[in-house]
Length: 271
Ligand code: URA
Image (cartoon, rainbow, N blue to C red; front, side):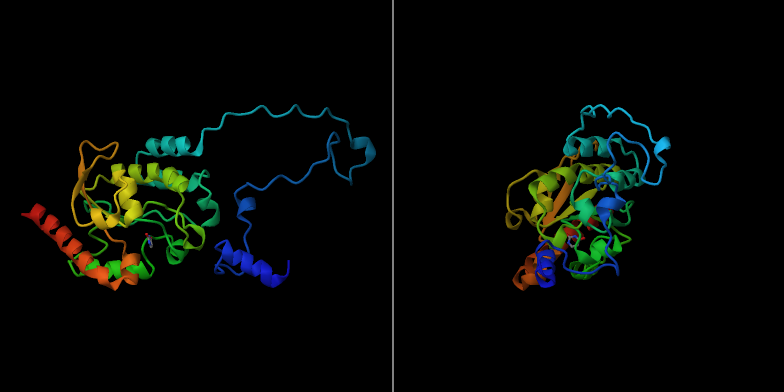
């Protein structure tokens, strides 16, 4: 394959920008690369004098070790985390989601976990992947401006994503990636214990609410949602995703209504 074709293939696979000066083989750094071939039956290397070599019996074939399906493992690992730090560390160590091998790093959360208000987006983009923080790229800046218009900044809410690793080339997460990552998000919510949730975009809203209804019908109305590990249901407000709003200016009017709906809810609690 010539260089140009190789480059085009990388682009198709989502490797659309250079993050570092030299490539990093993450299969090797994560210990996932196959071991280099070993001589069978002979111990020692070519420099070892023949007398030092010994013939050994071939090792018995490895016994199959039952490995829990990644989704069950994600559930168990998430449920075992008792603090946000433990959850972050557990997610960092989790190797069951292929996205973690292509992303630069885990994107966990930003903002104030004590604030009582938690926003959930879809998945990190290139800028989030680079910085390790959610919503720091173009849609994040737009979201910050929308929230500033109702008097909110990142000290007054916590923000995270349904998927904590960037899908290559910003492709949509697959159903199985969503199923793998959902237990981590639900545990995240249970540990934060927010008084209310804002779900941005169809994927986050449908996944957390276990609904098939489209975001244009869900948006703007508070719904009660049961999160495992919380004592009772909490109110959740689905809204359009800021990245969608950046592309669809006509939808900004609806988004503004949703901002006012959120502001009223926050104010009603203060009184
Ligand atoms: N879009 C998201 O859904 N999340 C981010 O963190 C950035 C963009």
